[in-house]
Length: 558
Image 1 (cartoon, helix red, strand yellow):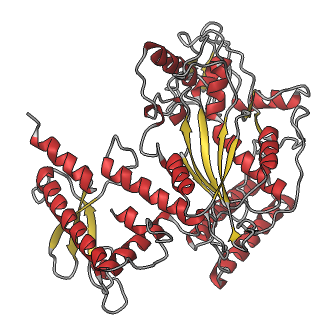
Image 2 (image 1 turned 180 degrees about the horizontal axis):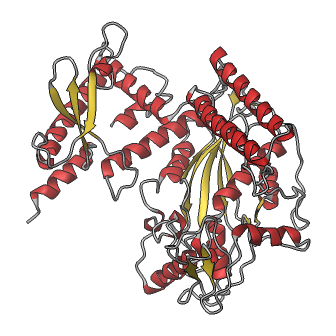
Image 3 (image 1 turned 180 degrees about the vertical axis):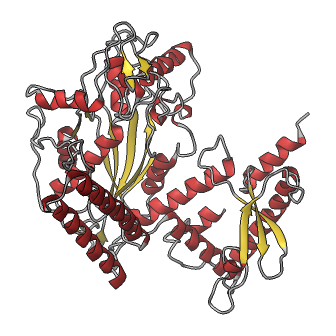
């Protein structure tokens, strides 16, 4: 016999009701009246909350669809800075001048150090105030402080030559125009088309694989390169878009997602606004690479007998000899001093680049949207079902390689190579890094799975949600504006400032059991859906910014 609580969750999922709601307690500061409100958890993974994950995926589909075939520029550019913002930057300039003057002043080292430290603190506070004022980013990078002799420590960022590798083909380089829309084409009947692209990028081969994604010969399969490519795949994609924009000469906009292939290597599907010749795409793909300049991989220590923490030395030492390990700065200094040094890894794309033209409103457009958003609600390791012992062995072998692959300069896996990570801690152990790339369910894809360029649709997800709310209001004929608390706005000012909010605990006496709250939410959601369906049968849906097609806001709402 099925359990009734499971049926409640199934109906809630089908109705789009969050099964893990968060309860907020709202107190009216004028009357003292207290009410509780459930808000969706906002999970993006189906394993946590199917309803919220599906809603997030539909919102992404709406965002990608709305920006894919635009024929106008989505963003007019940033607003000019206000007088207050410009004044803060001027004050920041004076502090920078004062700091430089202190080094030229005739002061004893102790006094100079105290005054420079005070100026640095003032600069830090002012930078935070500049960001809080609405300006994006810092006016200048932070200072490196002072060394033991009182001299400034500047230029801590290591700079390497940008000369291209000899084994990579050259690329044309054009001045990048500010436009983001593609060119138009005229048909024989005079009809004008503005096609766009669907692009798939994959990594190189690590060995022959079978139809189930497992290697033909596991002994010769290059798991090490597969792990390093997966960890640095986001950086390789960033380099690709940079090269592509410079090669074609306009600000190419994209929206896509990263997902694993059946062989468990990451690849990416992208929607590109406008068209680019396939020969150019192949040329840029072949010429794109990402070099990882880290200390060499020497494997001087065994994971079962790693370096130990020496309290007196303040760092890790060899367990047999007691010799301190190289610090990260010392190891990188050796790399910089070696004229014949090579990058520890070079990530490249494979030859299987696929690009196809897509027209707005076509069946191919919806099909490609499905490819991009197909696995957004799943963890990377759950995208493909593992059913055989060969697949389980392949997954475990890749994870074991990812477990001990360094993910950053702070990763404790560097202890296996005789190098201390940046800011080492006594509790760090190789194979126990907390980075996402080392988890079995990420397959090395620890970064963002959804990648959307800044000028894609000109809107944030919050803007698209607001479009959906406006669409629902127009369908139902609602004309009264409300604030986030659901209270009507009568004088143009939201009434949310009259309320105090706090997160309620499930065990609080005024919080109903989860089953009661889910049943109420199911009833409410079904009534809403019936109202919208009746309104849609009464007349055509309204045309608002979110509904660039018939499946715009209506799809996201339902």
